[in-house]
Image 1 (tube, rainbow, N blue to C red):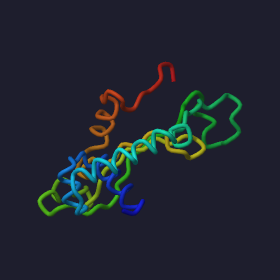
Image 2 (cartoon, rainbow, N blue to C red; image 1 turned 120 degrees about the vertical axis):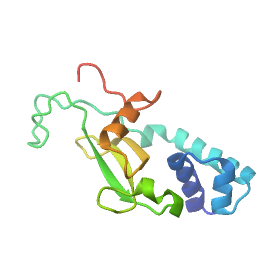
Image 3 (tube, rainbow, N blue to C red; image 1 turned 90 degrees about the vertical axis):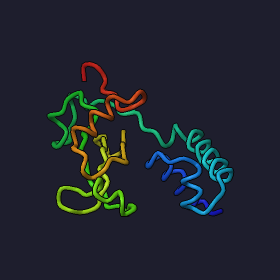
Length: 149
């Protein structure tokens, strides 16, 4: 199995909260293969956590970048965006965005150096941004805002 397919199965599982049986059916693989490849990919990501995960630092008083100068002590900026997706026809009404496209609502938080600090994909296009943010803040290991920042 190609590396691209292994990573695609891994990301699809995480983004859509699907079970082995669904993933196996979608990618034409057995549940055992899906499970084995998922854990292989997960172990690789965990080994690379120091490279892949970014620990943000607050914007300092002496910041010279005009775009970020007024955001003293902030860690970054957050915004939601829509990403066009293909979903089964029975799920299209949930994913239909305000302008009629079939899309996924994604919350992203970016540091001043344009590296992602937090990403929450998977919400239907019809979901309001505040609902997505509220969900990100309420998750046990979700988005955390440091005190005093």
